[in-house]
Length: 177
Image 1 (cartoon, rainbow, N blue to C red):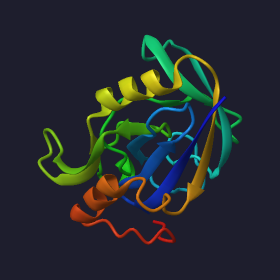
Image 2: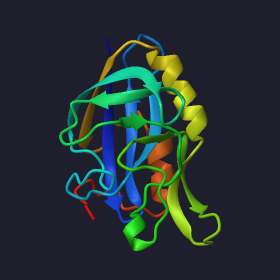
Image 3: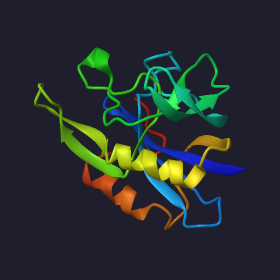
Image 4: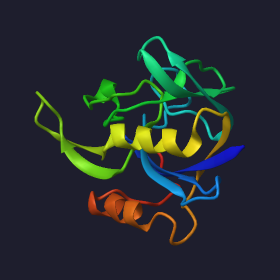
């Protein structure tokens, strides 16, 4: 069974930045940027999910009309998925969001101009490509995801960590909004 760890780097009103790492499967490790909603006490549809270990299953999503990875046994949540998107901000404070508690994978971090609003916000880029990379790595079998606060092992995610620093995000893993 594949395993992966989502290392949460920082959370602010613009979203929670993380790095997804899976070294299972025998091939090259999968290393992706992630964006989630801010840390808001696990409020459904508003907060990132709590730290913990979750079973992940490949299944059809009626909302997205395609197969996606869904997390099971998330306290107080249903329909928590990995799906394409860019923004994870606190919409109550005027930030853009493409998630209501799901995890948005990306190939890297960027500051992106919000359409029709014009302000800049932290985001992930290459989200559709990242979902395809996940599908190639994990396939259709269930896998385990551990969500932790902290940095990935040295050397594993250097490119993504540099991008997080370039966009000006404090990588103090104790930081919460």
